[in-house]
Length: 162
Picture 1 (cartoon, rainbow, N blue to C red):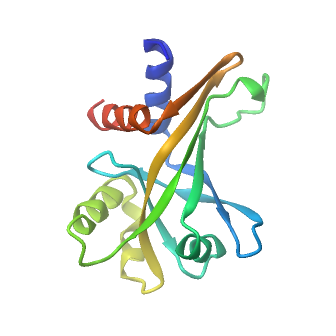
Picture 2: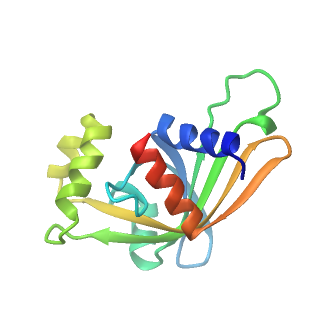
C-alpha cells in the first residue's frame, strides 16, 4: 500500500466512530450489527462496549471470532462502490474490570465517545478488545489492499499518533 492509500485508511479509521460488527450465532449463522468503536490506547485493536442483552454480544462471548467493517458514509450521490471501507478480522476478548488494561481502555473509550460514560455503570455492558489478525482496505475503485496483523497494528499505531 502506498503512502496516499495508507493516509486514506488512517483518516477513515480516525474519522468514523460507528461500524458494522459481524458475529456468528450457535447455528453458524452470521449476524451484522452496528456498533460504536474506538482504538485501544496501546493500538492493539478496537474497543467495543456492548450490552449482554444484545445477540451480537452473546455471540462474541461464546464464539469470539468476529469482523468489524468501518466505511465512509454514503452521501446519496455517485457510485457507492467507490466509498472507502476497511474490514478487520480478529478475535474479541472481554476485558475484565480487574485486568491491568481495563481502566486505560475505559478511559480511551469515554474520551472518544463521552456520551457512553453512563453505560459503564450498567451491569449488562461489557468492554471488548477486537484484536485484529488481518484486514482488508478498499480505498475506492481498483484500490484494494490486504493487510496482515502487523500491517493493521502499524496503521492503528499511526491512527493514535496522527
